[in-house]
Amino acid sequence: MLDSATQQQLKTYLANLREPVELVASLGDGPKSDQTRELLAEIAELHEMVSARFDGEDARKPSFSITRASDHTRSVRFAGLPMGHEFTSLVLALLWAGGHPPKVDVELIEQARELTGDHTFEMYFSLSCHNCPDVVQALTLLAMENPDFSATLIEGGTFQEEVDSRDVMAVPATFLNDAPFYNGKLTLAEVLAKLDSGADEKAAAKLDALDPFEVLVIGGGPSGVAASVYTARKGFRTGIAAQRFGGQLNDTLGIENLPGTLYTEGPKLADELRRQVSDNTIELLDMTDARRLLPATGAGGMHRVEMTNGATLESRALVLATGARWRSLGVPGEEEYRNKGVAYCPHCDGPLFKGKDIAVVGGGNSGVEAAIDLANIVRHVTLIEYDDQLRADEVLQRKLRSFANVTVLTSAKTTAIEGDGNRMSGLAYEDRETGDTHRLDVAGAFIQIGLVPNTDWLKNSPLALSQFGEIEIDGNGATNLPGVFASGDCTTTPYKQIVVAMGEGSKAALSAFDYLIRTEPADEIAQAA
Image (cartoon, rainbow, N blue to C red; front, side):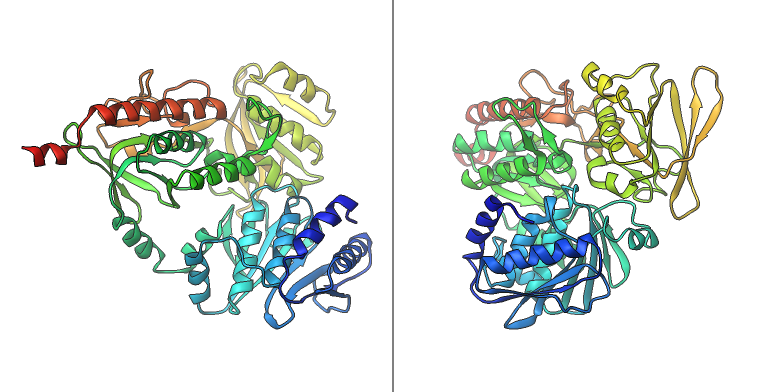
């Protein structure tokens, strides 16, 4: 089941076990049960503290529990094989069950242990979903640290009937006590924030207690991190306030155009950026969402940023790098059927549409790449483009045309998403040349029509925005407000690319440095007077 290199790597990890771990499998007939038996037997052979039994009686077959032998309340269950992106989750579950301490903020662990009440989690993942491991690992850790929590982590492809009966049409999909809890990526901190009614107040109090920064970066994507690294290395006290550290990287799979890096993946790059932030002693304020900008009234004064949890952060200079998000179609039915057929991540949700007919809306690089990926999974893909021709690179268009199960519709305006109230069943579009309306019978629609800047919170501020909501900047990354700079996908800079965002963040940081060394702090001027 595991090749020799993987076995050796796993054996090295298992050397960190501090106490015995039990694997108990519930198996049926068929190849997946056979593979589960083989996998668990191989793992048990790698370390004397790991034992495997195959007499489990759980209703889901194949499935297996990973349990701390000295305390059976510390346990997690995998239903299906946790391979692909989830193999790391399997390794961590083994280590945590065996007493190896998790590399997680101690405050989060304590918060998890203090929660009370029965919490039975069931979570569905796909092996190609790069957002799922965060949820799998968060729920695993909760189950290992708090006996009031249980977690069953289900590979949707193995339990397709169950997925259909619960109307799971997007992963990660999490249920709590048989009720829907959340659809989408969640970190441990985000799960705890949803469960702990006092989390916002605690977070706000912690932020309010912070001393003012010299440079505060709003946004934790590639641009924001680049800016923070530059100002921190210049010796300025720097903080990052991020709604979701990593930004769009968390939703990006293959990256092959970053100079000096032949290939990486978004979540991996986000992890590397997080380590760089830590190494440069930058204060990371994750899961902090800005809601209002209060700029300084004079040169050298303190800018203030109000957060949605009620806290206020202060800084002499700001770098706004809030990035962008997927653009919505804005047609009837889109919100109603979001995660019920309407999807935005082909890598995560594509496997749930295996053998079905789907649509992709958008003929740029993202849309054509999505159609290519999905053509290998689903029965048929219809690509819908508003313009009279596709806008994707020619190499991608050639690849798309090589698939027999792909239809391309140009000059087509999507007008509605239709369904039965529970799930999507079709898509309506208008032929822009004839004015005729048509309906496609499709089980899903992947929306790939570009990005919209995350600047809604700035619309009532004195900061200048373009007609598209982008922050207007000059060639130095400066805005119309002294001491406020901006960079990346939220700005008027053309070409929304990772490498461009990183360069623009560095430039904005250098401009902030120049501003700070040329501008005396207002309070020091007042004291001198």
